Length: 243
Image 1 (cartoon, helix red, strand yellow):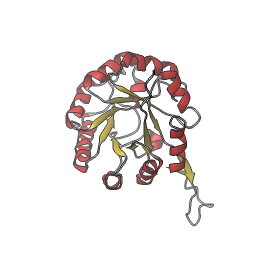
Image 2 (image 1 turned 120 degrees about the horizontal axis):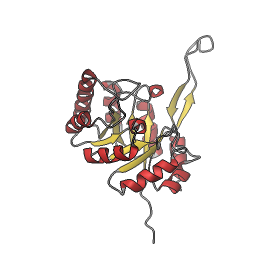
Image 3 (image 1 turned 45 degrees about the horizontal axis):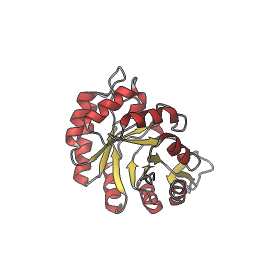
C-alpha cells in the first residue's frame, strides 16, 4: 500500500496580518517578507517581534535578503545578513530563508557557510535564488552539502506550474536528502497537479486578496492596491490536497 503523503503548507506573508490569516487558515509555517514586489526583503524588527509574539501554532520563518535585485552580495551586505540572522535568533524565530550566488551563477558556498554557522538551531531554506543558478543539478548538491533543510523553487521557471518537469527531475535527484518546496504561482487551481506530477509535498503560496483602500481621498490619489492573505484562500488551497 502506498503511504499517505505528509504535506506541509507555507504562506508567503507580507505582514503580521497575513501571518495571522495563515495561522487561522491552517498553514504549518509562514515566510515573513517585506517588499514582496521586489521578491521579498528582510522585514523590520518590529514586524518580526510582533509576529513571533502572536504566532503560537504556525512556525515563523523570516527571509534574510538586504535588497531586491540579484543575489550577488557585497561584504557590507553580508554583514547585514549575518546581523539579521542573529536578531532572528534572539527573537526566537523558527527558521531563516536566504540564498547567495556568485557572479557566474553558482551557489556562493563561502558566504552561505558563514550564514549557516550563525543559523545553527534554526531551520534553513535556500530561497528562489536557486532558480537563477546556471546548473541546478550541481546547485542542488551544493545546497545539500551546506546542510540546508529545504529549497524553495519554481523549477527555474517564473511559475511552478511551468517548471513541473524540472521540479520532478530535482525531486528525483534529491532522493529525500533535502526537501523541495514548490512555490511561485501555486494556488487552488494547480497545487494538486504539481503534487501529482512531481511528488513534491511541501508548497509555498500567498493566498492573498485585494484589500479596499479606506483613505479619505482614495479616488483622487492612486495609493496602489494592497494585498493580504485571507484564511479562506489558505483553507481552500489546502483542501485541494487534504479534503
